[in-house]
Amino acid sequence: MNILIVACQIIVALGLLNVWLLRRNQSTEYRGGSADNMEQEFATYGLPKRFMWTICCLKIAAAVALLAGIFLPSLVAPAASLVVALMLGALAMHIKVKDPIKKSLPAASVLLLSIIILASGQI
Image (cartoon, rainbow, N blue to C red; front, side):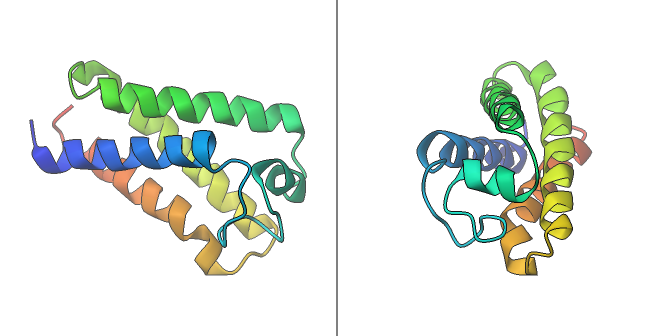
């Protein structure tokens, strides 16, 4: 197993868990629009609160699957594919509200790492 790909899996997974479990209610310079927390950010994008919880569950599940994929490689491709789709959606939302590029950098970084995971051929 390629250690660089495993490192990408861990970085993506821990990043997702950090955002959704530890920092969901905190202000960051990367929140969409002028939102101070995740709920406000989804409102900025015009998305309902229930959609926020759906995305939350999907991202946490993908993160857990990427970590478990270190030992069960069959989980990696579906999890990384889901993260790619979710990050494309995140980037689309930043574009929708005309955020500066800086606010899209975390989503773009996670997207790139997830593409690298998928392209590795290790899975």
